Image (cartoon, rainbow, N blue to C red; front, side, top):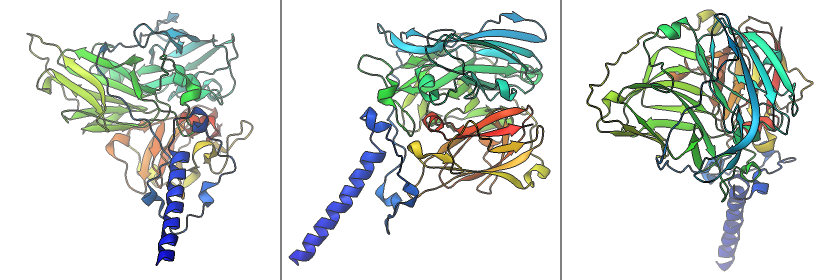
Length: 507
């Protein structure tokens, strides 16, 4: 009897050791050196777990720092609209400068930051369909960078992937024509392997494309008044309120306890009781958000990454993976009382909203029924899959189709203007896997199916990023309207930096 008890105790201790070791390897974020674990030589897909069910161990590849709720003590501000250098009816020119500086995120403290045309984040660039655009790009950083136009259908040689880099002090001028429909896009650096750190320090800005359809729609469109950019980024600050990326870095995606909106910590929004249009960008390195209002009232999604949905999608919550954008209209005339808050799914208060007291009657509201016409034809739905992508791994062992990025290798080719069906699978490994947001440069695709079923309404529009859970497979319709070499990759920025990328040549 004593012997059996002893054997049982030893077995229990060994099992507990396995669990504790798993947590220390996959969950810890406390030591910066351990966070960027070098997983070289560790092939977790071949681990022999015996009869043990990984899900019963409650070990996740994703260890995400809990967010703190906004204290609502700083009024939300909005990025400036970038003034053109030159503009006429058919063309526009801008200068965009990557620079470093300091920014007062917290009162009385100067935090070292990066920014575009300023110390932190960037301005909003406004473009219009049909215009010829010139960007004069300047690198005032002390390191290499690139300028990537995320979601923009630009020729491959000006798309701004990892190559060519702009070295310290270098300048470059690029030009192209804007051919795509109205959309909310963004721009950020893409140097390999320093994208994650540069975005984390502040290099991110938004791009608005307008067209005749967007101008005619009866929706909020006055910038900074009822048409509001919302850039979500979570950060970890040191005791002296600095952004120490090396300390915060995690190979499976860097997260922080402090959410900044448009660079504002502990934000609140004071606004009139009316309809507002929120253009939300998930500019975080890794964190996904599931947003709702604290009174659970409905709102309308009108657009996704690449532009308007065909019709408004009435919802009570919206989920956003890194790099995704959504446009929603919130009717604040329906709010009882003078307060409402935007909440994350863990009940973290993201943005307290205070409605102004006014003697005027609330504005009348309009409900737009038709926004776009972008259906997928049966011909495209029935096309055979021509390209397959398997997203796999974690940390520094992430791959696409078992390969790491090689700038000298072209992984796929595709004809310009030809629609192909790509199959993208997030491989569920022996440890369960983790979400991977799959992004393609230079195009806006349409989602045909997820695990053989039609996509939900929020994915019915044009997309440049799709987030897949372990075990999910998506079919997407991909057309490149410009030629050149384009990247595809996971948009967890640390995965991208570790080589979870590939290239497609379009000619």
